[in-house]
Length: 149
Image (cartoon, rainbow, N blue to C red):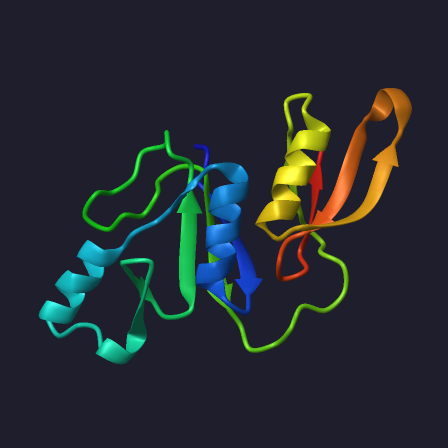
């Protein structure tokens, strides 16, 4: 049996980082407003556990993005396919990532890198390995490394 998975990324501002990655990947920021409203109405969630951003209610310290074509639970807004969850942690990022995202540009490397820079990413290092590949190492707004090939 195959397993399902999601990538979880530690963050300092989960909502802002989710918005960056949603724009970068052309994903959708998950909207758990309906689930949160139900939990608040049932007294199962304190108001201090949520905050609002961009017209959505979010669980404080958590925000996720999902691929727009993948299935999701309409009652919770939670994706059931390709998904990245950002969770706030108290400590700052330290050192190089042991796991990173590769973004494939479809042959438009310069255009994609420029678009990501406009969204808040920064270039770190260009790699041109000839037949092995050509890519840019970049950092998202919180300093997490990723590659654009």
